[in-house]
Amino acid sequence: MKSFKQCWCVVFLVACVPVEMADLNEPAPQAPAAVKSLTASDVLAMQSPEQLGYRLTKKVAQAAPAPNTSRPKKGKAAQSNAPTEKRDIRYFDRLRRPEVRPTKNGFYREIIGKTGDGRWVVQDFYQNNDVPFTSPYIAIKDAKLKIFGDVSAIDSRVAWYAPDGSLLKMAVYDKGVEQGEVWLFAHNRLSAYVRDDLGQNQAASAEKAVSGSLNMQFFYPNGNLMAERHSQNGNSNILFYYDNGTAMLKIDDTPTQSTRVAWDKSGKTVAPHDIAADLQAVQARIRADLKAMKREHDLMNDLLD
Image (cartoon, rainbow, N blue to C red):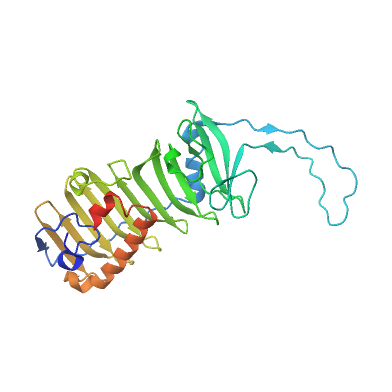
């Protein structure tokens, strides 16, 4: 495949074909309004027993300790009379290896429910502060719950969180296979969204990929759309935007030709090479997002390089 300088195709072009300049008087389109980004609490609500279709496991309440009527000694807290719960928990160290007890900088997994067909519903947490590491998710039948971080055991939508509780990523799995729909977040704001219809996070040829559909959106930190691509049956429409919402570059591709038009930040039509520096900065952001999605080595590599 040819280089970016030869074809202006380093990120979104499927194949290099004859390039034509579009109408130089075409007005620069404005990016759609910023999407409402999901929050950490939104995703937890999406993973409720009603949404995922499971019942909570019965918590066994242990007998409450006898009331402590004596005056507590100085510097010691009063004894709690509240009943405690017996929780089904697995512990892991910071390297995600199984442990028999909590460890500093480690993790723990709690079994919180079960589906009607007998699959466990679990949720993982950071040990140091009890912040969720994941949302609740369904594990495949007979999953080995002592293995931590194995996505091949996931059988539902799942979200991952940073230690401060902010969203990092959300994806959908069917029997451990990613279904081609991924959301990426930065500081609780949507950073990227990718959906393809191949339904698996595995290598595939560009010829196979372009026979289906692909939708991608990437966002600036201010929430404005940075780039979008919509592809169907070998035809592709791509738009890059400046951070103020004005279009930067439009590419319309078919199997036989590629048409493009570029604008500066004020909306004035320019030659594509005039916006090269801005475009390369956007491409660097997109590549970073794809790497965080772990999509840089699968079919996305064929489509975008």
